[in-house]
Image (cartoon, rainbow, N blue to C red; front, side):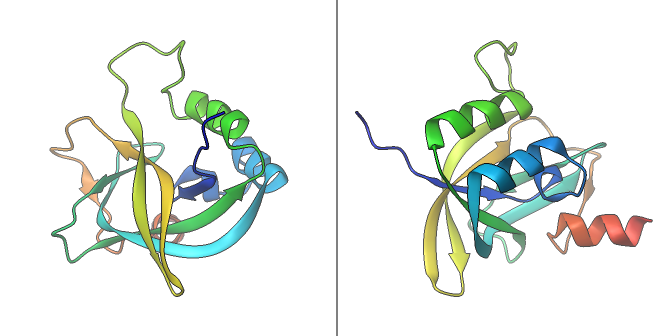
Length: 137
């Protein structure tokens, strides 16, 4: 059996209260801590979009989870993110291993990275989706 990375970094709706998939993660994963990666975060409507940008001075902030059963959990979250095997192409997101900066060093995590054009979308320059939602209210 091939080993699969068991760390997942979430930065958007999977952090929000009342989201059943966020509750699923909390039941089947252990919260490791906070992290960030160099990139940009956008408001694209009902959810955010993050892209990698190693040359950026901006970061995307979120939480790292250690998954109990990575294969099962990733298949559930892939469906939520619209990249499951039954979802039509082209997908909005791709799941990518990304180096996440933490206070204890780098952790390689799965991250859902946006693939579609972002022209005209509002950039969340502070990179923190939950903080952005609070300020929007």
